[in-house]
Length: 259
Image (cartoon, rainbow, N blue to C red):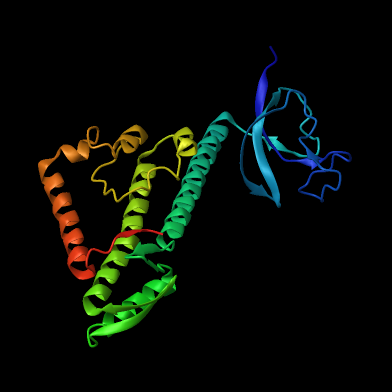
C-alpha cells in the first residue's frame, strides 16, 4: 500500500487544467490530476476558489495546477474540526430558518371565529389591536373579516383579540419548542434527519432538553414525561380553562379554529 500525504487543492478547468484560482473555467471543473488523490472535506476559499482537503500518494507531483500545497497532519486535523463545526452550525441555522418560515406561514394563516374568518397577517393583527382600542369607547364596531362584514360588540372584540393573541403566541411557542429540540442535538446526522414540519398541532412548552424520540412522544399524554408532573398538569389545565371561559363568555360560544 502506497504511503499518502495530506494536501489542499482546488478545482481546475476540465480541459485546460488551469486552476480556478487563476482564471474562469469555461469547460467545467474537475479536481487536479494528482496521483492517488482522495477528497475528504472542504473549508473556506482562497483567491476566490474553494479549498478542498484530502490525501494523495507520497511523491506525487504537487506542482500541478490546482494543488495548494501539502499540509501537516496536525493542521489537517484542526481544519477538519473547523469544517465539521461550520457544517453543523450551517445545517442548524438552515433548520432554524425553515422552522421560522413554517411558524410565519401558520401565524398569518388566519383563524375562523364564529363563522367569520379573521385575518392574522401582521397588518391584520395591527387592525385587530386598533379595533380592541376602539371597543373601549364604543358599544359596538363594524368589523371586516376576510370573508365579509360583521358587527361586533365590545365583548366580542375582546374575544377576537384574545383568540388572535392565543393563535399567534401558540405558534411562537411551537417555534421555540422546535429550536430547543434542535439545540439539544449534537450530531450532524440528527440535524439532517430532523423534520421541521412535524408536531405543529398545539402549543407545547418544553421545560427541559429532550431527544427527538421524546419530542415526538410528548404529544401523547400517556408517554409525555412533562405531563406526569401534577403541578404542570394543573397549571396547563388552569390556563386552558381560563382561555376557554374568556372566549365563551365574550363570544357567545363562537368557535375558534385555524383557517
